[in-house]
Image 1 (cartoon, rainbow, N blue to C red):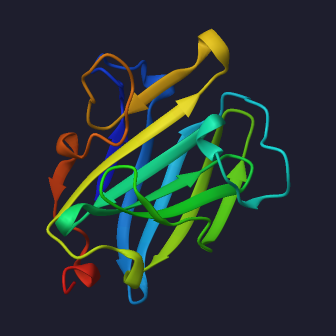
Image 2 (image 1 turned 30 degrees about the horizontal axis):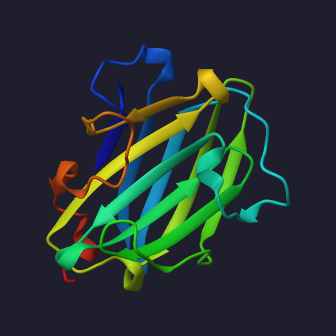
Image 3 (image 1 turned 90 degrees about the vertical axis):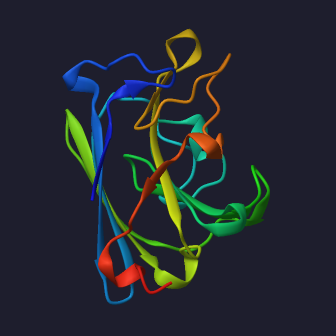
Length: 175
């Protein structure tokens, strides 16, 4: 399954050079998340690569997977190897944060890639809905992009009703 982050948060199309993609695939242990995104050169978060609180304040690509009863996970990946994995129950209600996740990141001058492996136990039971976002820039130059637009007065990536219904890759359908 492929998600294209190809629109601004409110639905305008992005230039092709700004489009990021997320591919989801199954493996025996869970869900593999592959990100390919342009690198805009924002400063790295303080601290070593690994679990990083408030990663959304930096250049980042995010995946949201919503299941039954408003249970969802949020995975954030950054171009410098920082990541954030949260589980939530209800809009913005964090249940677990800074969860460990296996991530491999590669950064080049114009783009970056990351692969994360999410254990199947973290994926909420279906039916599933998803969205993906990309954030970059600082101050007035801050930009918010999405796979599924989030209409409203300002960007809010936790508008669960705007997530797209999906059938997750085969190994996860048993949940």
